[in-house]
Length: 291
Image (cartoon, rainbow, N blue to C red; front, side, top):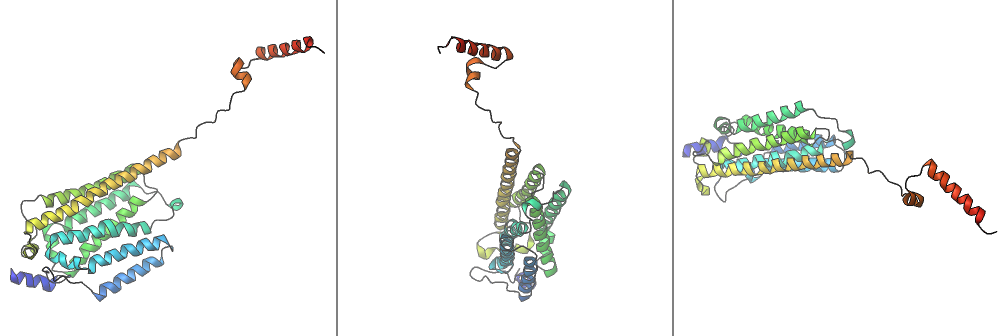
């Protein structure tokens, strides 16, 4: 096991499996340069103001997830790696997606097909990278490591972008959002309630943190399960609110009923006969009135 830990430390992108009090930052200058260039390029294509602030926040949070001690802790703990994924998928990705939205009046309608494809790719990537073989492989190859992160982060950003688009039909958005949240919750529950650890790479790295590999895996499952459930609830509430606003906007204004004249109130609807009788009575009053 000691030799395995040494091998892991030599090959893992985020460094050696840490022990308490020895967490390190992963300050890769090439990563910082590449990520900074990508951020600057994207910002140059966004309008000044809110879109740029959202994008800058999203890229900044993602960079922190890659270089902060969370990355290093993920070498030792599966739960920390899951937390890193949650930060990328549920915080950084929606911020960047929101920054790319055009003005509300200029948003093109989104069909059901792109939603299904985006949700399908995101689901496939999420489940594939949390299978034992592909997951363990990310610790022994930088190429595989970045393939995992970029596919998860990219597919999540595209999915968020489509879910936020104003032209998407609300039922389709609701169903897609619920499916995305449900499949994350399902994967999290499987990990949380498993009766054995799945990931050999963490067999000898969790003990310094007072956890067994199974305990660590269960915590990781909960970290994935709970935020995904909140995602489902949030999407459902957003879709419901948008649906209610649409119904309110489509509801015609109540017709304005003019006040009835006194003659109408006293005598009821006016007819030709009633008008003639009222004229005759008025003439009679004029004839008998004193001069």
